[in-house]
Image (cartoon, rainbow, N blue to C red; front, side):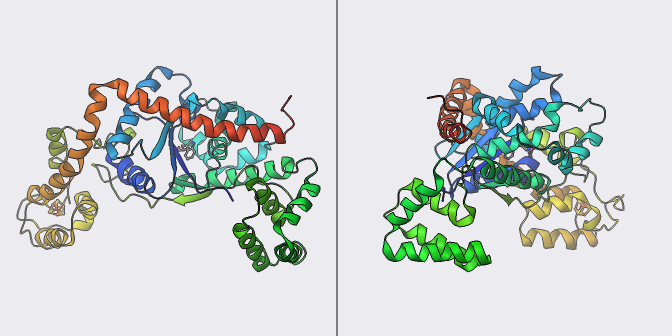
Length: 400
Ligand code: TRP
Ligand code: SF4
């Protein structure tokens, strides 16, 4: 019943590389034309693992934001903000924490994975265990129903859904709910009211999902209802509680096929990256020195693209004709590796040129970026405060 809304966040890792671009940002840029979007920097999430080295966070935040804008995220379309500038995220995290079972947090698969992977750090902290709950608050506070994430984050979205469901069950019965529902049904008017009650009965007593859909459709079309009444009846239809928090969906981003310079996954910690705004000379040199199929020792030795990381780059950056040319030339030793790499270099430089152009004004005038973010934070905060008013009221914390 709430309007579509997309939300996603990234921890501030500093300047981004082309893996981030092809893995996430391209998708954000597309989504901003389809839905109202909220994109934020999860600086508090960064603290869960780097609480002992906070001095780099600020620069990382600004560098990352410039890359979002360079990629084409448009502040006229999307709300861009910083998590810690919307302190309501902390309030919702705290309130949700009261009813979050420890076992749920301990069983989120990323928890044990990350503890093992980052074993050089002491992560047996309250904040780190609570990582997925803070993420749930990030999402729920905007009533976002679509969350674009990679496969590694799907368990966090599932967790968020459970948190929302639990909250709605605990606090979704406003005082006098049944009476208000009866009043709202009256407002539906004779025939619709009867159909609604039948749908409610069939779904609640027999689990008839067709009836559920019919009931929902009916509410969607009922012009006589206020938004509040509509939500009430929607909640009653589904299971007699009000949907205060909205269960989100993961909008799974297809995994980027982009390898790092050594053929492993592109990652800062492997030192195999190309930045989104790499200096052209440096980009050219990185690709030219990239390893290829080890069988091609001499120019006259034939090779196999399947054994070469450059081939994976061609799959992202080259058209079919170029790819045919690569396969044929590589296997017959008709082309040299430097020759083969040139179209990739050209395509990357072409992709990055507009990014450098878009970033330049923000590099020249940092105030421009500060203004965009201040504005985004204001907008985000308004939306967050609206939800928090309802959350506090549902929990009996209004004190009016
Ligand atoms: N955990 C996410 C990641 O590591 C970042 C994040 C924090 C996030 N809060 C979010 C993503 C809310 C989507 C929605 O990538
Ligand atoms: Fe790799 Fe191209 Fe050289 Fe073949 S010709 S080994 S695909 S760089």
